[in-house]
Length: 71
Image (cartoon, rainbow, N blue to C red; front, side):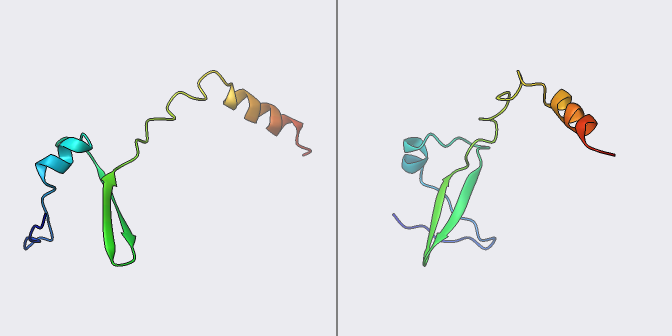
């Protein structure tokens, strides 16, 4: 498949390819340069780690560490 680059540097990702990788309007993509090739991939979710440390008392640990430091 080939497409032209528009005047603003934009290209359309063909619908068949968007469907294959489940890319929806508003989704973010990452661009990566591999030699002379530009790779476009769905952006990795930044929410995947959300809540992982929720059960840890990080503030308490930092406060205890701070109290244990010599003054």
